[in-house]
View 1 (tube, rainbow, N blue to C red):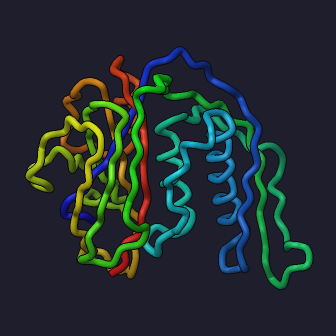
View 2 (spheres, one colour):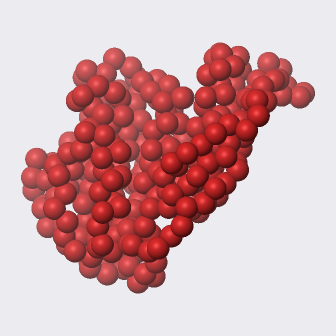
Length: 262
């Protein structure tokens, strides 16, 4: 959780077509989970791979692969898939054949499940303007409660920034998508028209209600050529996804994941 935070998102409307792709996903484990659970994780990975194959590898550049004790590995994979679907939505998927489950050759108790799926990937509108771009850098990927998060944003031109924070711990309080910039409750600076470089600092803190030792959190960065009147919060990440398909304003998306330790 962050007392003050930043995110950026960008998108543009282009007439892209849906694509049916066949892709595999593989999950390895040491026997600590059931074959069924391992295959579910493999299927989530296959769906992410399908989006990457259809939309492009760049969408996964800043997603942390760590899976927290709170979410567990399966939930972590589902959370990451939700982020991937901000760029390309899987409207239909089907397993092809039976999962391939067994022990890795030459290994000592390492098991795997490999799943093949056929999926229909609907691309979300993309920014194809090379002059409209930005970059985001976090000072680290793992934070202890009370440490400062420093976010460096570099833009190619003037653009409006909106930042959302997603805490996918579950429950009504933590699973919502919260707009943290511009937002006076998180930062006195509410000037979201940015040009060149901007460095933001926020103090992280571990939510007292969570009894585990570490959690995964995500930042969604939104940039647009015009100021958009976003809601202060969205009940589900799917609600935010729908908004990206409605606008005719030039935008582009970016997101980052990080781990918070008590």
